Image 1 (cartoon, rainbow, N blue to C red):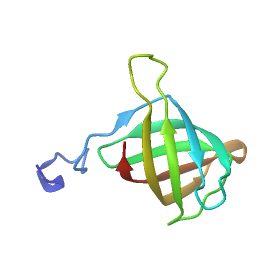
Image 2: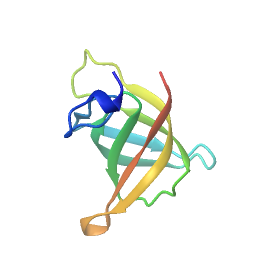
Image 3: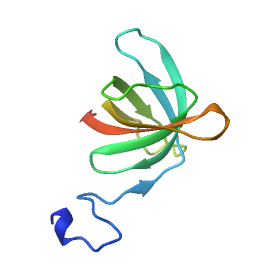
Image 4: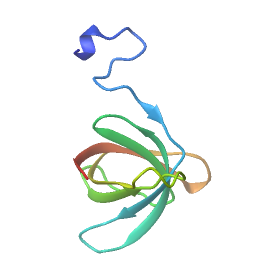
Length: 101
């Protein structure tokens, strides 16, 4: 199904799933590690909240962990496509997951 086949409220190729999970964010160029909170996942993207302002097109590595022991940690290469400032010095970071493991 293409996004044109979806109804008006959801024009995505993949349904967005809302998550509340810890995210470990690594900048592979510096090795710096940051923390965030996952907000949503789709088939090829993710959004998380963090106090670090990343740049559009920046490449990162994400480890999204589940509170449930039966669920494996999702690890992915990630490219930032949108950075939105929100309350209290936090940023909503959205992007594309390039290589999911």
